[in-house]
Length: 435
Image (cartoon, rainbow, N blue to C red):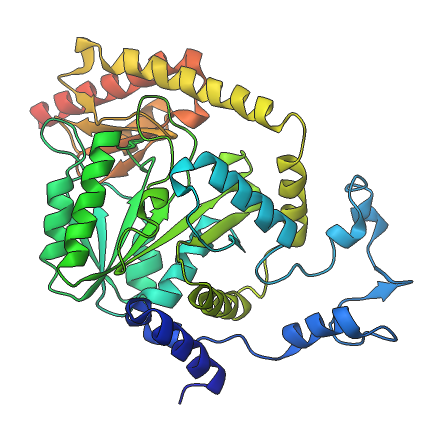
C-alpha cells in the first residue's frame, strides 16, 4: 500500500504532467518525504522561540558544540556553517548561486523555467537518485559503446535495467546520431533512459553544433513516436572544452523541447572546480510546471533522506566560499589552460605516423581523457604489460580500447608516456608472433 503522502505527490504529478508520471519507477511512485524529525525540526527552527528540543545535535550557548582540535584547522569558517546538519536538499545559498552559474554558462536556457539545483553527494549520487525515481527493472538505458563503467552498477546492477549500446562514432569520426536513434526506436519500450555524457568518459569527446542539432531532432522524432524519454545530461567534465564543440550542456537545448522528454542535469564542483574529494554535486530537473517540480523535489528529498540523510555541510560551505571568491574565475582559467596545453600536446603526438601501426586515437576535443584504439594486441594485456614492465598505469575498455587520463600527466611527460605505450605494444606483438 502506498503511503497517503506518496499518493498525494503522484496525483499532483499525474494531474499536471501525465508523461512524467508514466516515467516514474515503482520506487519513484512510492517515495515521499515523511512529516517526521526533519520536517518537524525545520518548523521548530522557524517557530520555537522558547526552546528547540527537536534534532540530535549538541549545542552550547546557542552554538553547535565542536572539538577545538577540529575547529583549529577550520578557523576561517563559522562553526554554524560546518557542524549542524545541512538541509536535505543542500544549503539554499549554494543552490541559488549554482543555478545562477548554470544559467550564465548555458545561454540557450534563456527564460526557460527549471528547478533549483539539489545538492548531491557527488555526481554518482545524483545518478543514483535518477535511478531511484525513474529506472524500473527491464528499462532500457541507452548508452554509446564507449561509456563510464559505473553506469552499469548504478542502473543495471542496482535497479535491473538493461543497457543498450550504439556506436559512439561513425566511420568518419563524427557522433553517430543515426545509431543512437535506431537503438532507441528498436527497444520496443514505451519508456527509456538516454544518458548523454559530454565531455565523454572515456573518449574526451563533445559533439559539435551541427551534431547537437541532429541529436535534438532525433530525440524529438523518438518522442513523436510515442516513447517517453528521461534524458540525463551527465556533465561531470563540463567546461573543459578545447575546440569548437558545443560550449554548453545539451540539457539547455532539451528543456521544454517536447512533452515526452524529461531533461535532468547532473553536474558538480567535483571536476568543474577541481574539488574531487569534496563530493559536491547537483541535480537539476528541466521541468516547466512548478507543481510537478515541487513534487519531484519531495521525492528526491525522500531518496536522499532514506540513503544518506543529507550531504556534508562543510564541503558545501567550502564550495560556496570558492564560488564567491574574487579570484575564482582567474584561478579556474589558469587550470583550464594547463589542461588545454596537455590536450594540444597529445594532438601533436597522436598525429605522428610513427604510432599508426600500433594505435590511433578516437576523436577527442574536451575533458580529461584520450582513448586509444589498440590495433595489434589485446588492450587488457597491454594494460597489464605497461604496469608490470614500464610502471605505467592506464585503463582498458573491452578488447581494443585504452584510456589515458592526461589530467594527471605533466605536459613534458606526455611524449614519454606514448613512447612507453608504443614500445609495450610492439613488444607484446613480437611475443605473440614467437608463440
